[in-house]
Amino acid sequence: MQVFSKSFTQQEPLSEKAIASAVAVMRTGRLHRYNTIEGEVSQTALLEKEFAQYMGAQYCLACASGGYAIHIALKSAGMTKGDPVLCNAFTLSPVPGAIDNAGGMTVLVEINDDYKIDIEDLKAKALSSGARFLLLSHMRGHISDMDAVMEICDEHDIILIEDCAHTLGARWKGKLSGSFGHIACFSSQTYKHLNSGEGGLMITNDQDAIAQAVLYSGSYMLYSSHLAIPDDKVFDQYRLVTPNYSGRMDNLRASILRVQLHELEGNCRRWNLLYGTIAKGLRSIAGITLPMRPRHEEYVGSSIQFSLPDWTPEKVKEFVGACAVRGVEIKWFGDPVPRAFTSRYDSWHYIKKHPNLSKTRRILDSLCDLRVPLTFDEDDCRKIVAVIEEAVFHVLAISTDS
Ligand SMILES: *Cc1c(COP(=O)(O)O)cnc(C)c1O
Image (cartoon, rainbow, N blue to C red; front, side, top):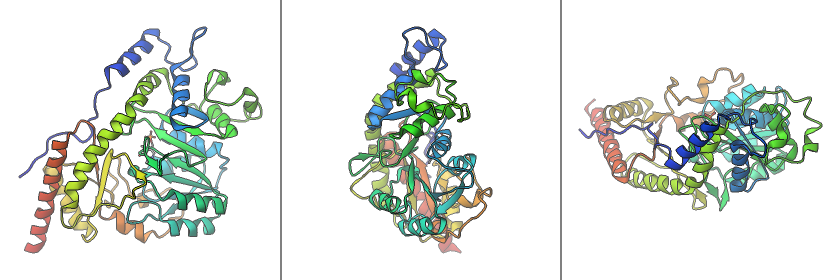
């Protein structure tokens, strides 16, 4: 029996440069973003400026988490209590959680066989719900047909908010993911493309949205020290009517992230090398299908997904178990029981009106997901493929026995 022994949740250590940068902040004791001395610019403010530059956006706010960024992005975009918000049903629980936190009503949209938002269902739900917002989650790095999405948003006057937790550094037709929407949100939680433990970033070119977001994040009337915001005058109409939802970024995490931003492009190339190795191996296994990824989708392969479309959920469950005993940890989105980070849309019971999503359900029933941490090398990837192949044979052998 093939056995793989590395951990799927072990990220690389921080680079020496990032560590040195963090230590320098710790030596000052000034970890709070608004705790600066005369003439000093905080690490958090610098991060916002540099992230905005990287993304080609005018404004940026660093905050507590990706989910927090989505929550205040919705509110800053003008969402009010009870507003319907369209969202693809294949996403992670903090996404509908952020909509709920902002007081919105999640309207789940079907996905297609390539794990992206289903354009026909998006059109239909845009009409039937009258939603003014689309929270498009580029779940596990799968970028939807952005031309079609933008066309629907334009036609129905829908404000697009992008969830780029898995697409930082990815592009659609050469344009960075996160530069399509009115607002885009990112996460620097350990399992994403930057790692500060926890953390969130949002970008926009809308001066009213960023002013409100900064105030929501808990700026204590000290927003003038930010570097990626509009003129103070923009804040005047919001400063006394916007509650403080305390969710700031701190200088320690910002100092780490500033260094990691420079390491991002190199890391994206490394992820894609590993992704390519696993994808190539999986494609040669009968029964497994990988999503079609169009030429102009320049993804970052920090995780890989595949389907076993002709298999029953029972067989897929058997397969996931056979991989697990061989050390390969597969997340199965068809599991009716939410486990760890993975949950299916129908387990979010707080969403009042659950539409019938038979297509999404069929796709999730056999959708398997693997993390690809940079602590793996190409040889590890080939071993993972060998384990998966053996597990497929194992399950097929059982089912022909019976
Ligand atoms: C991780 C994640 C988020 C939220 O990020 P946190 O920083 O953990 O709050 C949002 N969307 C997706 C798709 C994610 O994977």
